[in-house]
Each structure stands twice: as structure tokens, then as C-alpha cells.
Length: 95
Image 1: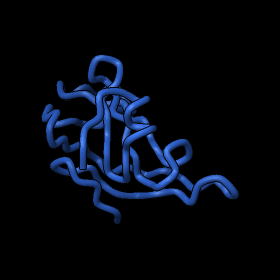
Image 2: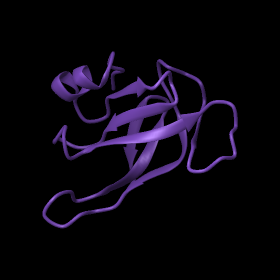
Image 3: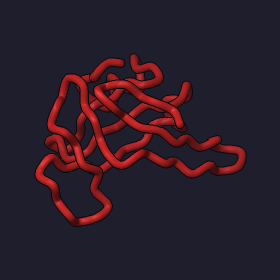
Image 4: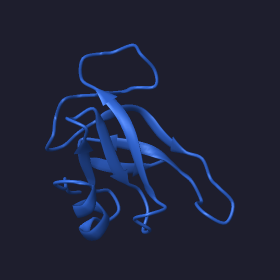
């Protein structure tokens, strides 16, 4: 899995499991499916232990990030089948 420079790079060159940091490392975009437009999720993250939801805990590692808790993308009929899994040590793990 690979970190990309920005959302444009992720959309055009990314594959399943790739990611990029956004908004001064306060968000991470994760590609969880083949369709870059329909199967990329943007997640608010914090490495300071912020309690303000919804923020996923990020371990601060930009090369092989881990975020918790799991990522759940709800399915949308005729659009997206949904996805559930983890980004752990830079690897996307489907549940």
C-alpha cells in the first residue's frame, strides 16, 4: 500500500489500499475499492487523542499509518456496496 501526495494523485494513480493525508494531516483519504470516485473514504483523524467525535485515532506514522477504530462505509444501493475493515500498519484489512 502506498501513500500519495494528494487527492488528485490518489484518484489517478492509486489502487485499493492506498491513502493520502489531507488538511494538514487532520484527514486521511483511503481507497478501499476499485472505483476511485465511489470507493474512497475521507476520515477525520487526530494523533493527539482528541475526544471530539467523530475523530479516528491515528498513531502519527505517515509511512505506515494505523487508525482506530475500524472503518465502516455503509452501502448505497446502485452506487456503492459498502466496506468494513481496518487501516493497520499501512495495510487495509477487510473484515
